[in-house]
Length: 134
Image 1: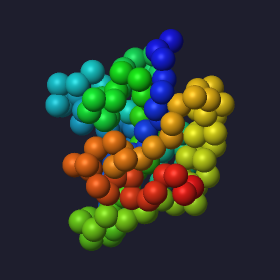
Image 2: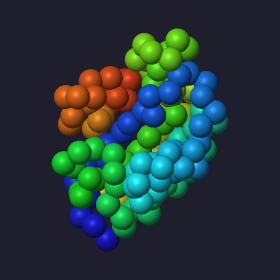
Image 3: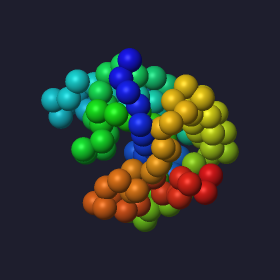
Image 4: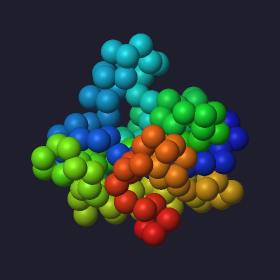
């Protein structure tokens, strides 16, 4: 297993209520020439926790931090206008994210849990909420 020092939370930058799922992200990332979904986990609006890349594989979700991290992405992050950054998580997504992060923290107790914006100044609105306050 890889040494994990970071658990990074992302949003997909889609408007509130988007019906996207991990398979959609997987198709998109493959169209870019990537080796499948860049995230290890994706949480659609219904709160399902969907496996993306295997944890043993290096992700493709946060430049300069992929080697030692697990990437978690919830579908959403933009208001209904599709432009304005917003915390669009449904209650089901909030609960699923809390459950998943607790499990990952239990398995990787020394890993920091951060938002994408905490590590990449070019992504100031990802994941749309302050991860440390959750």
